[in-house]
Length: 253
Ligand SMILES: [Zn+2]
Image (tube, rainbow, N blue to C red):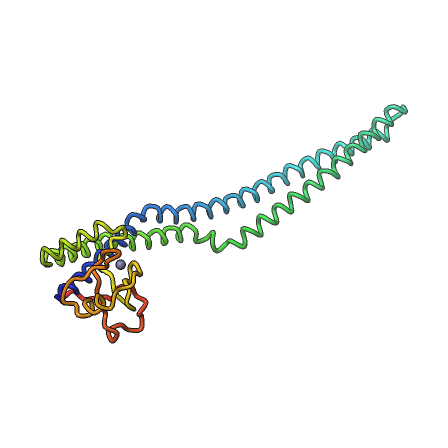
């Protein structure tokens, strides 16, 4: 009986691993997409900075051309001023020169703004230079590591399923039937639980001393009155430092 109980515990451990591996396998596409999204976001930020830098450069060049034009306009107005013979010509030339100078001053303010934009964008790009240099290779390396890791899940799952099948078919029919019935009924699929400190560690229900004594003896299958799980007892000397572990790792023998 004790050996069969050990097998039930081993079966439970395998079922728990299978459940976890299945969840991991299900999560693969979403986790991979998450890595891609993270890199897309970083590439997007870098592109935005590069665009800001380029736009500032172009805007500055355009403004400088406009300044040249306005200087020409101001020079023409100065010449007209010198050569004007009538009062209205003189007034018009003064107005024209004035307008050109005002334009130049406004353009110079805009040039300063664009130079500031350019400096900021260049500083931000410089700060991320290392990241920019390796962004694509980092992305590939991260995706490859992820694919390598997730590629083993399928193999591990196949091995665990095979081991489980073997263990399950070698159990007495009555035992495997009981296990399957409990497992089907319980939401977390955990059909076997440890009895510790006089209670069921799965549902925390207290166990009567007599029931506890039967579980300790391990001569027959005892189930929890409350949750219906098969209960087992781990002698204190075999509980090592990690008493917090919910299930001991029982070797399949
Ligand atoms: Zn219970």
